[in-house]
Image (cartoon, rainbow, N blue to C red; front, top):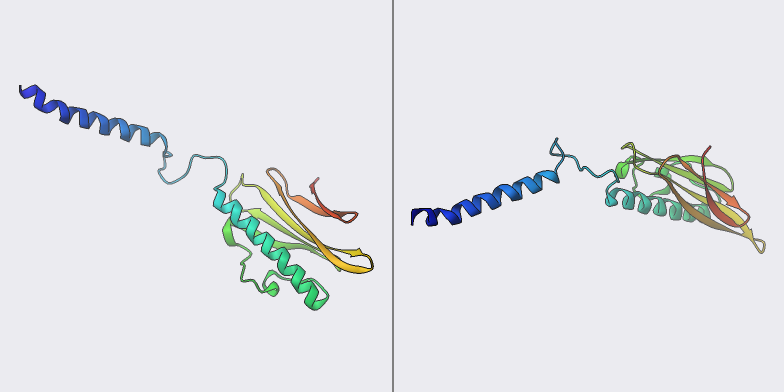
Amino acid sequence: MNSLRFAPLVGSLLSAFMTTGCFGLLVSPDGDRDLSVTPPAAETSQIRTNLAALTRGQQAYYLENGEFASTIEDIGLGISPGEGGYQVEIADRQLNQVIFTAQPEVPGNPNFSAGVFIIDIAGSPTTVTVQCESATVMPVPRLEGEDAVCDEAQ
């Protein structure tokens, strides 16, 4: 009869050891890093959002001032160049275009870029934008006719 009283206890202990063992498979040996090789969705989502805001900000800045802002701070959105796991900068600024690049701080995360281009539609200047992503190299936004497109850097 004594052995029957311990059966639930042994079963509970066995269940606890098995659960702990299974959870151990989900945690890296260091205990603080994710084993996933893909970047967290929050990081890539944030940089996409920041680049979209910066391109819209450049469009607005151009409409107000007749030129593109020369710094991210001049756009006035409160976005920091090193925010969200990426180093963002204005890589190219000309009279008719501005290009942002976003390099990941963590190797292996995708590279991003975005561009704002001035085009002439029926004698009136307007802007077009594009956002690019590449897992291997920095993508290059460019204007092809009236369309903004992405190329892989050489």
